[in-house]
Amino acid sequence: MRKELLIRVCADLGILFVATTLPWWVSLVLSCLAFFRFKKFFEFVFFGFYLDILYGVPILRLGGFDLVFSLIYLFVFSAILFFSRVVRE
Image 1 (cartoon, rainbow, N blue to C red):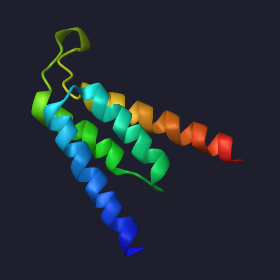
Image 2 (cartoon, rainbow, N blue to C red):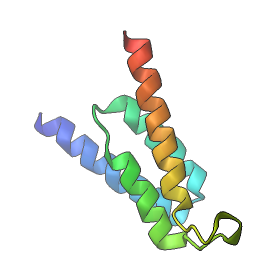
Image 3 (tube, helix red, strand yellow):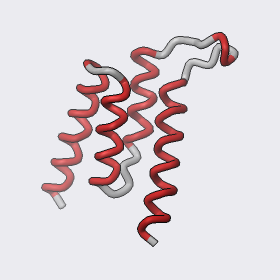
């Protein structure tokens, strides 16, 4: 249990580092991989909010909506959660 928690914390810190330094899609791919590695990887959505805090700007075509990364991450999280439940049954 303790080793699993340490691996999860290291993965979270690694993804935060990647989200800060590399393009957003790299952190999305790493988050997807972590989702399959860990049970209930709800930090996935947090990384979307983190990217919006760092790089989010209002998009006029969307009515000034500025949580685009959060929306992308939430959509991907929901899709992976749905498909993983379908595949596991």
